[in-house]
Length: 190
Image 1 (spheres, helix red, strand yellow):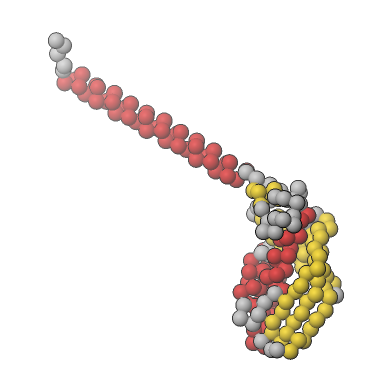
Image 2 (cartoon, helix red, strand yellow; image 1 turned 90 degrees about the vertical axis):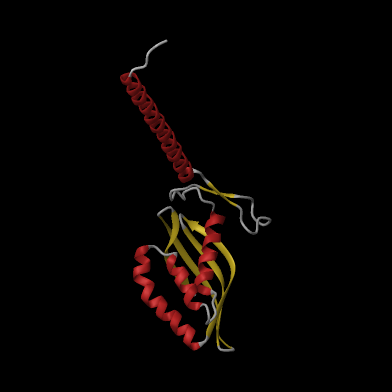
């Protein structure tokens, strides 16, 4: 039989400790690599949007990530514009402030800084006067890169009395910012 000395036991213990350290390091490196791969894949995977009114659309819309909207469908841009205009054009006295704040959140930082105070004051004025407004779109079309023209009828009531009814054309422009399209301009043509 072999005789085990104290030094052999100590040497084996150090060998086992090195083996465990190496195993932990190797496992940590594998986990870090998998995490990096997962984050990379999540940031660079295309998003497939299935519109609510799928039956009237030509199918799914694919949008590439990281703010590359060059290949975005004109229908996709038109639907975004209709949603954004609904925030600022369809409201009641109870929700006008929330609707305007939501629209402000969709703006680029420069436009937000320019329009924030005046839009919130306008919303407070509509709330105190009991004004309600609705916009009935008749058409939306993307004209150029990241710009959409929406036609429709704007109707406004003060109390129970209709105070405004007019045909209006809105032009809304977008700028990619932090991977999303943000409103960079809104113009009305009566």
